[in-house]
Image (cartoon, rainbow over all chains, first blue to last red; front, side, top):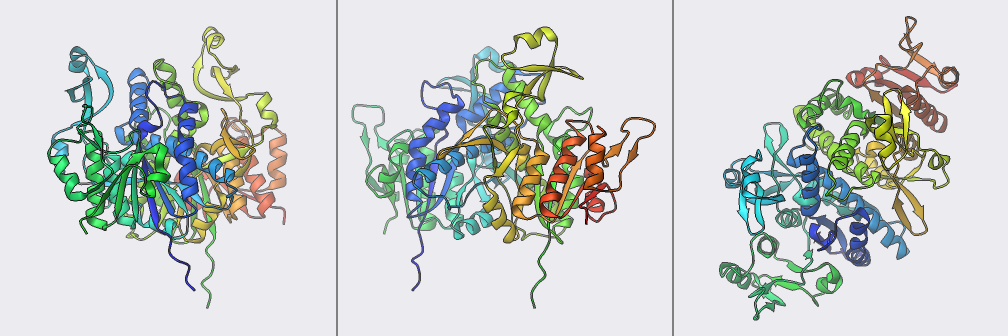
Length: 312
Length: 312
């Protein structure tokens, strides 16, 4: 009798979920914030193969600020800072998972946290228009003096960087093989380290990839069944921030596209999450859910968050 | 007919080898410096299973300096900085290896760079006597003001941290399984992220583990056949830095211990390498070699570096 094949669940954790509003980002705070989402993922690992990806917005912003402060030390390009956050958050997630699995009495589960790099297209139009704001807020006067492009945002002037679309996850074959062997895999941190394939080499580029789009690409490439985007909001909403705000329980990709065209989902926050969910569903035919890190188990079982389904 | 089992080679790369004397540590310099050692390891991967570990001295020192500069950002404890360097150097090594393998026409080799943490004993006497110097050099006046222990070293006053002995590599089962599946594994960067096992949890500690001792421990735990410590010197020497300096070609562990007792190997540089080599050989019965990152292939085949053998 064949053992029934386990379904594979990918949970993309928001980097903001690790540093809550009003927190300064101490290591102990970040570790504490991981307990609730990771304990749920530990329990889900009994039923599902698990891939965990994660954002790194506040963490990479802090590293940028620290290197800006210190003129005596060689400054690293953005892709190296992304790599550093993969180390930091990979460790924080893995050791929290280790603790939570032991608490459940699970001592023999294999899991690894992998450095991941992601190929982007050197002809991506994003390279002509750096648009993703990162790091500190400047006054107009300060912005004129910094040695990189800035744009005026709602918060003030900020550095903007190129954010190309993910083409392929370099480690996809390795990740697939590890999942097939029942490993839990933590990977694609911060959207992955962006690289361009040039002849027989991968070369890092000064850019950041949206972590939800990279997670969607990985989910397609390794054959994930359920893709969950977990952040600090309980789901997608229409009329967000108004009296008529309404959370969406279950929608189709067509409805999601219509709301997106109406401008219901703010760029830089909910919009890329919905785009990533649609992209995954259209390529895989499977389900995606956007929900809170506090409700991962409920969302995966269809009882919380915004469930997005194909047209069937 | 059984395919003969490949031997496993572990190469521990010195963190100093990535930032050469007189270099400022730009990312591009570190990547360039990796080409010669990694191209040799890529060729050796045809014959051997490969594990690569690495140091992080200059890199973790830079992160420490950067966070000292910047008082507005939450400072991370040392184990998180070690994790950050595992991300940075894991990426640099992995992508250089990717390029070098493609240059050899090898496109189907699996390899991963893993976050690794290493258990230390909370009763290790090292916790009573922080002794490993890291980070910047201070004047006596500055040293009095910094909020952590400092000691006078040959270079001046420096922060000293606890450097406990590695007890076990947490990911040893995963690493063994990956090697058995013919993966190249990059791991245990900077000696691993130090953790203490407390009940059902692993908790990080503000310490650093010697990377050669951690590599020796890993080599024993996963059954490595050849352990190479590759740095910026061509091997161990007696009467080092004098007219009578003599490099050692081939020695036994007994000879190595005798030289060590004579104080031939400086602490903080050659001594821990020789100690790590002896520890590995005595537990495994296999060979260790201490040599230059420029001569990895020659050293592994017994034609360069200091070969250390058991007493048989």
